Length: 118
Image (tube, rainbow, N blue to C red; front, side, top):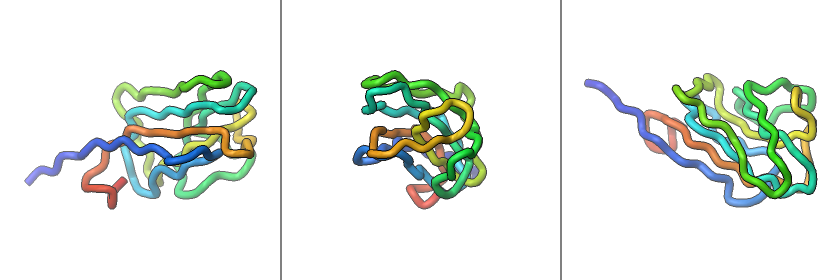
């Protein structure tokens, strides 16, 4: 018997500075954020189960201009073994957490059964 993964779009329902998408093994297809801050911020993706501390190096980071939505599509999917946490940072290389709920986050992920596996 083969099991086919299901695809889910997960969006945080309000503005935040971090979004714990899942605490399970997952394949990430796409990530995005709307930057509601007046300054350029960096969308960061972490292979973690909880919000990271300042100074943590992300798996991926992309600049997001003020007032715009931007992100990254992983052409073949990216494996996040521990889980997926998205965060907004004021610096590009390591997390310098923003405050004040400036991001509207989303992710397109593949998992193996309903939300219990994503």
